[in-house]
Amino acid sequence: MPRTATGPVVGLVVSLALHAGLLVLAAGHLSVRRPERPAEVPTVIRLQLLPTPPELVRPEPAAPAIAPEPPARPAATFPAPEVVPANVPDVPRQPASMAAPPAPTAGQWAFAGRYTLKNSKAYRHTWGQQIRSMMGTAVEGPDQGMVRFRVEIAPDGSLAGLETLWSTSPVAERLARQAIASMPRWPATPTGRPLVFEKTISFTPFATDGPPIYKDDCLPDPPAFGNPFAWDGKSAHEPARGEPTEKPDPRAMEDCLRQLPRDSIEAESAHDQRVMDRWGTGKLAR
Image (cartoon, rainbow, N blue to C red; front, side, top):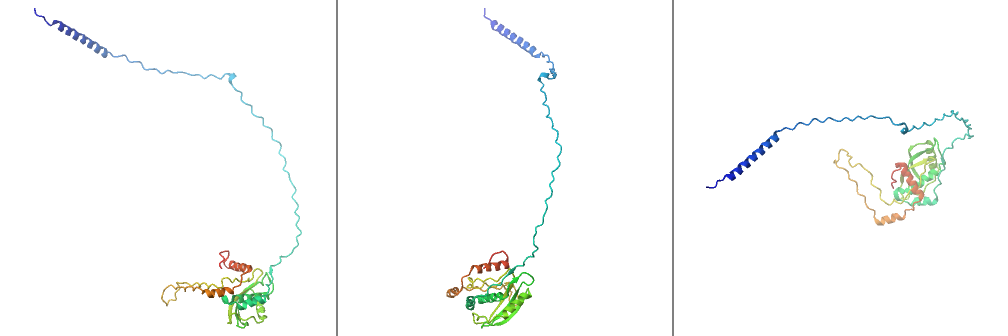
């Protein structure tokens, strides 16, 4: 009798049955809904503050005692000092005055008679010093002032012309003219030609005509200023050109320097004072 395959078939059937049962159990387990958890109720905790035990309470410090204010004292009063006026004599203020300068010496006139530079500068200064020395003491007041003359001296030293250009005091002009009229003949002019110049005589208690300085007399005069754009309306309308300054001859410069005197401290001080009087406290131009 042939063998049949019943054994394996039975095993297969049993395996399928077992797997089917497991599937049914798993499906049933998954389909069951779990009961919902109840909502959480918040827990309320109540606190009650108890009073502090008396043994733990610190006593407050006592306020310091306020001392009573002392009674106000009356302000001390002092008697006012007695003012005794000083016994000052009633003396009027003395007006300022300046004595006349000394007259030029013979040596100064001799030097002035041979100094030819700058229109006989030494002669002009010595002439003014001689006139001022004969006018006397200048006193502060209505009689003080200045007078400016235009003077012409002949070659032999005699007065050829005298003209008053302006005057701030009739007394100063009168005294200066009296001194000029009473003067003898002056030395001959240094150049042998008539000497024409202008001179201011100061008759004041605070100004004097100090000695001039001579150290720059050999240098050529600076060119006079002229407006280069001035036009007379007729000539060609072109700006004027200044003439160039010629350099002095070295030999002539040496000869010129030999006759220059040595300037004194008084001459330098007088020059600086004249510049300050004219231009203020600016640069002291030489």
